[in-house]
Length: 112
Image (tube, rainbow, N blue to C red; front, side):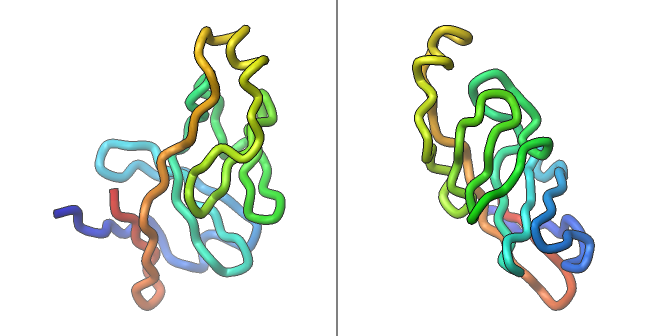
């Protein structure tokens, strides 16, 4: 059974900000959206773009490379850019992995 791992203090990620941490050998992006924290894989599955360089709009993470949009709560692909992805990578767009986030006092923890 996976155990939540502390990644930082709650105050270390301002509202609207994102940071990347290594948890369980995986690069995890943690985002603060209105005081609610979300954790997803840090690399876009299409061309491995660093998602922390993207932006957040209304709880949606936007890839800085192709504009693919991912729901930060579920990791689901919100905007299909398959036509572009297929040309660049020879495979279609897909979801990103999401992870459980817990707040324990002032500690922010992620379960991988």
